[in-house]
Amino acid sequence: MQKILIIDDEIGICLIMSKFLSKNGYETVTAESGAVAFELMAQHKFDLVLCDFRLEDTDGREILRHIKKNYPGLIFIIVSGFGDPNLAAELIKMGAYDFINKPIYPNVILETVRQALETRNASV
Image 1 (cartoon, rainbow, N blue to C red):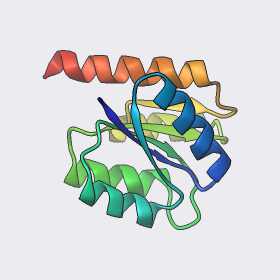
Image 2 (tube, rainbow, N blue to C red; image 1 turned 180 degrees about the vertical axis):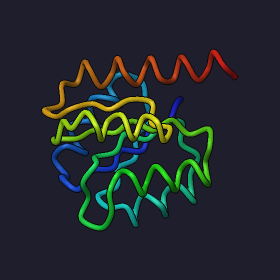
Image 3 (cartoon, rainbow, N blue to C red; image 1 turned 90 degrees about the vertical axis):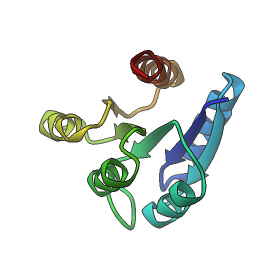
Image 4 (tube, one colour; image 1 turned 135 degrees about the horizontal axis):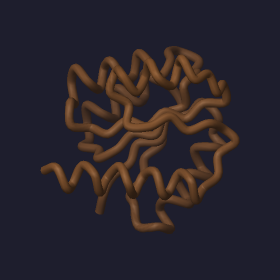
């Protein structure tokens, strides 16, 4: 089973995404801060990270840098309520797989996750 780390400082969003992705066959773990996410990444192997851009202790840019440095094969998808096309372009250039604007539509998240994992599996 593929394992997804969901990082968002809004517990409700973590729970909704976790339940939905679990129902669709993924194992999920949630983190409400960058610090907790970094600890979880050190302890577990994840296939994909879904991350809110703005967190209380860091942002998606810093988490992406950490992932690219320490876990280069890990797929990173950013989710943000701030639909800034320049930010999206910057993060994708840095190595994010995709940038999804809030509000979150579960079917959009699921399709993006499936495509990202299929793309990675096809290239391995």
